[in-house]
Amino acid sequence: VEHPVTEMISGVDLVKQQICVARGEKLAFSQQDLKITGHALEIRVYAEDPKNNFLPDIGKLEVYDKPSGSGVRVDDGFEQGMEIPIYYDPMISKLIVHADNRQEAIARMTRAIDEYTISPIATTLSFCRFAINHPSFVAGDFDTNFVAEHFKPAYLESQSSSDEAELAAILGSWRISQEKPSLPKKNTAVSASNWRSNRTAH
Image (tube, rainbow, N blue to C red; front, side, top):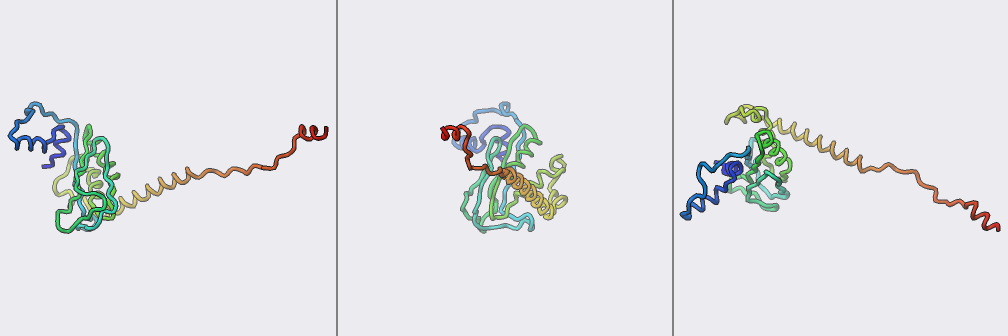
């Protein structure tokens, strides 16, 4: 269903292969050639407010800065300055990561979510961060009742407060590091040396 995950672990561009088949071409590989490498995760980023029963949000993307880097992929159809309308599906993008194993993939996804900046539109990024780091998800022990069983909007409030406190601590440390201790002022008055005095005297 989510073809980017398959593409990340197989290295095969499925959309390209579909187009080739539609042209009447044969696949350049067989089933035996396919190998699964590593672990991939995907989240869907929606313009919805997880703190308000996932109510859809609309408006202008004043800030839209997506993550990048090794093993990180974003499939989207928006750019900064574009409008999220009321007429269509509220999905903004798909965020996919690939790593050597599940634990590393979760860590990479967490970092990618933290780097994904969307404002002022409400999105599901905070919920996705909560979900992928929940013990049940990490252990692979979950089902389609995950939200009903494990999620409450208040959890995101505490997460936001924790993130803000961490950011404040980082900024505070940075500011302290930038403050240079004041040095005592040097006496700019130059006293005459004995050599000068003696030279003048002669």
